[in-house]
Length: 392
Ligand SMILES: Cc1ncc(COP(=O)(O)O)c(C=O)c1O
Image 1 (cartoon, rainbow, N blue to C red):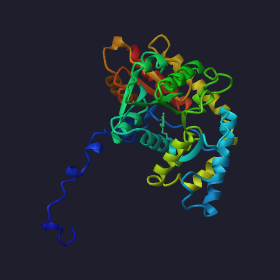
Image 2 (image 1 turned 60 degrees about the horizontal axis):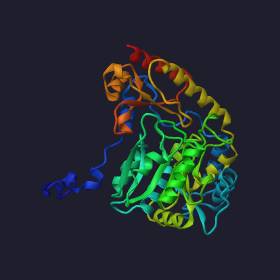
Image 3 (image 1 turned 180 degrees about the vertical axis):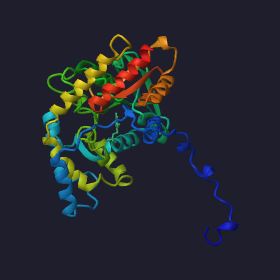
Image 4 (image 1 turned 90 degrees about the horizontal axis):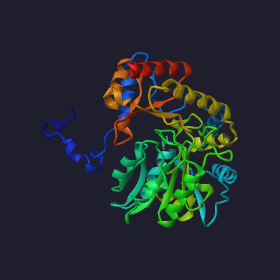
């Protein structure tokens, strides 16, 4: 101990932790990851990141930027070369021409960074936003952090966030509807019609549609319409798009994403970024520029095959809503087993198979999330164990 501190009372650290922070549980996903780290040779179907390497051109662009000493801060909004590349891509993908008085874009520290700042920019304490249940784990926790309310829309059993389900939840405090398609944890891809209905509803009720499109590149051919993943951006310029590079290009640790949408909102997000994340990591902003020229179609085809392996494994044993994208299936634990999903997951873990219980993503505990971002051999092995546990 350092001089003097022996006579001083120890800080009662718990008393110093904010009620805000204490109100947040550490992620149930982390608990499974910690378990995986201690297990010998687990069959890990819990991981939410792809199992392929970052494209060579992106690696080279990053190392080049580091070696060229582009390691300092960038402007808050993002380096002009990346912003230009994003706009070229958005023009081709959703027809947004920007930047303009109506539309703007900011490079963010991951999709999470974009979501956090967007929700902070829109919601005051007591305000509400609506999201699907099952949901991405971050949504209700960010709501707690900023004193807002994440109102959950029950989407069982088909996991579709439809305008009809959302409308009855809108109150005078609702500021936004947060859509995630393709979704985590279900892989649900909304149709163009469902998206259009949500856009119309938001417009009619004067709320913002925020679209978390982190998995937009991971849309399987059978869920694409007119060659792409349905997006509200093709219907309206008044929604906020939040996208990321991590999942599509195998670089979740690079923490790169972007938000694009109405200029006044993007300017607010920039202001908040200035005082929080400051900017997205500069060398990695250079690193993601070549991503727009990478062809992901062989990877998507491979993941679609793995999705089909999952559907086949559970055929006749339990219900799995066909995932249209991302790399997750939300699998129902058969009722005849008479156990919760958490209990089923404990049994699976005893057989070395790691999946995440549905109550991490939902108010219900009836399903589990299985990630098929695992090698086909491991996936097959894990599926056989899970099937066996269901058949009994
Ligand atoms: C739906 C969804 N949104 C956002 C994120 C966060 O992405 P990032 O790693 O880019 O912050 C994830 C990560 O799993 C996700 O599944």
